[in-house]
Amino acid sequence: MFIDTHAHLDYVLQNVLENQTITNLDFLFTDQLESIVHISLDTDRFLKDYPFLSKHKSIYFATGFYPSNANNINFHEDKEIEKLKKVLTDYKHIALGEIGIDFKDDSYGTPMAQQSLFEKQLALAEKLKLPVIIHSRMSFNECYHSLNKYKTPAILHCFSYGIKEAELILNRGDYISFAGLLTYKKSLELQDVAQMIPLDRILFETDSPYLSPVPVRHKSNIPSYVQHTYQYFAKLRNIPIEELSLIVKDNFQKAFNI
Ligand SMILES: [Zn+2]
Image 1: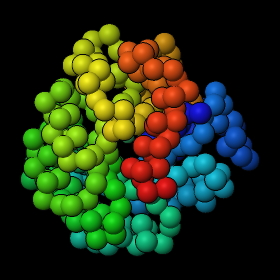
Image 2: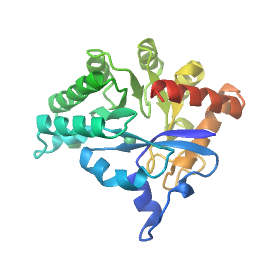
Image 3: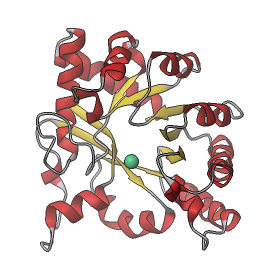
């Protein structure tokens, strides 16, 4: 049984369904997929998607303001953080996220604006005792610095750094989540991390509809493709896939307090 700890089901459904309507979500749970964590990138999207997605008992929820909200002039930070607090309190969530810092290009806002939004959400997670799901691209030091100001446990989503960064995260007691990136030929640093990481610190995800793993790399990603990343890791570490699934299920329950 597999668990996808990071999927954007709103986008997945848009891609998969196009103009069809569906009445239930069972079709997502093929190929031994057991659970999905659906990530909403802001509170409005969460409120729109929740009535339908919450009908399926194996879909869990996480909501947070994605870093690019820091670049929206209509985004009034304090007011929006209040809205997030209300959503996280009124509806069952297993984490706050994805939140973080992204320096890929200018579209994410200034470093200062991103840091401010990130840290306000870290403070909120600490207050609500929720773990955070971190989005960090080309920004390890900045994210790590902010994270260390708060006591909230973290899941580093779609980890894309090397051993040095992984060790700092592991020393905090946090979790590293591998996406399809792990299966790409060029991801040598990440594969080194997968070789050394203690098994009780790992999670797997698709980040669907993005980042499809090999061998379905050129298709739009769906949660059940998480099996390919599990299989890649199992082979790399020479562990039976059934054993790996059980370990990851245990990690999932611990990381998200399920
Ligand atoms: Zn994501």
